[in-house]
Image (cartoon, rainbow, N blue to C red; front, side):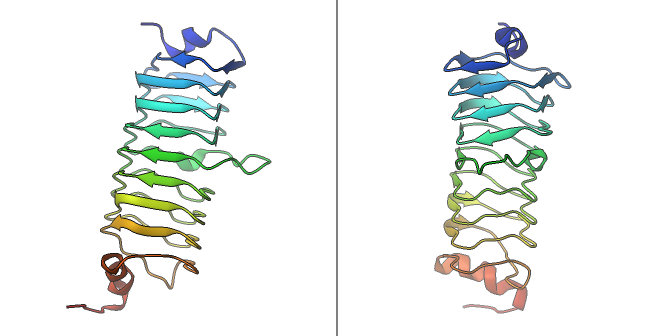
Length: 201
C-alpha cells in the first residue's frame, strides 16, 4: 500500500479523492490542501502535518496519535472512529476566515490538547476526552454528546452557549471559565458544584 505522500505525488491540492496511505512516525507532510477528500484506514501516528489544510474532509479510522499539526487548518471536517491519543490540536493555525465547525464521532481523544483553539459550533459525539486540555479554548455553542470528560481542563475556556447535557465525569470551576448560556443536566451540575465543596445527596 502506498504512503500518503506517494498518493499525493507532489500535488499542492487534492480534491474529492479517497486516500488510504499512511505516514510513518516522524514523517512530514507539508503545504498540501485536501478538499472534500475521504481519508481512511491508515496510521499517521507520530507524523507531522505542517501547513496542511483539510477542508470538508471525512477522516475515518485513522490513527492520529501524537500527530503534530503546526500551521495546519481544519475547516468543516468530520473525524469518525479515529484514535488521537496525546495529539496536539492546539498547534492548528487560525485561518483568516472562521472555518466551518468540525465534528468528532466515536473517537478516542484522551490527553489531547485543544488549548487556545476556536472550536465554535463543533460537536463531540461518543468520544473519550479523558485528561483533554481545553484551557483558553473557545467552545461557544459546542455540543458534547455521550462523551466522558474525566480530568479535562477548562481554565479560561469560553463555554458560552455550549451544550454539555450528554457529557459526564467533568469538573468545571465556573470562576475560571465563561459559562453564560451553558446547558448541563442534573448529573453534570454536580461537576459545576464540586469546586465549591458542595455535596448533593
